[in-house]
Image (cartoon, rainbow, N blue to C red; front, side, top):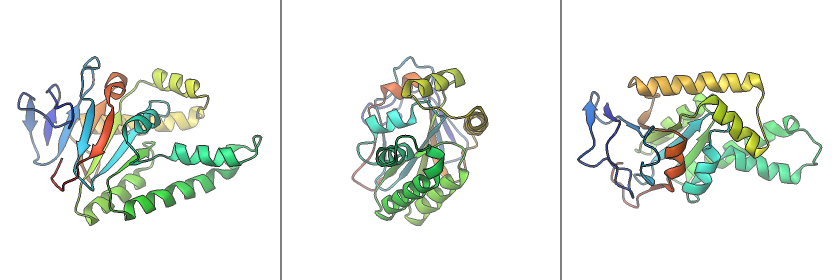
Length: 223
């Protein structure tokens, strides 16, 4: 695995420059650590055509905000599906009543996007490892790669983000998310990427705020 902790990245591609410091352990698997750079990280992460990208992190960490700003129409976000359903439902109807329908609609939309063969950026809450497994299998089927973009935001900041959007999760659910995301971060830091992932990019809030594009090249060359 190649570890790239403090190297410079080309602003339009996210590809490490020759000045990037790297340590190689397992060929072809990359960890890009863009945290603690004071907002001086890349403005774009660009992957090969047809690759799949999963964006994970705590609720309130900024996943949906990042995807809406940077994914340029390639994003599949369960939050968008929820908001579409909420707009059609009676205002006083609790979300829990129709949550299963929202999830079915979200995964149906994801399946349609995957069948297109195009590159897709997918929202992941961190607790649904089966979704990452599904994406890894799809990436292998189409001969492409799966990449993880992981927002490493402290719990207080994530709670603040939930309050700012006027929607939160229960303490029990948040604790589950904390454990799941902590495992992902720890695994990435130790060089153990989730099964099927070709690369992982670690972002803090400053690095996420700096990003303006998560996209795909037109040609088939690797990221």
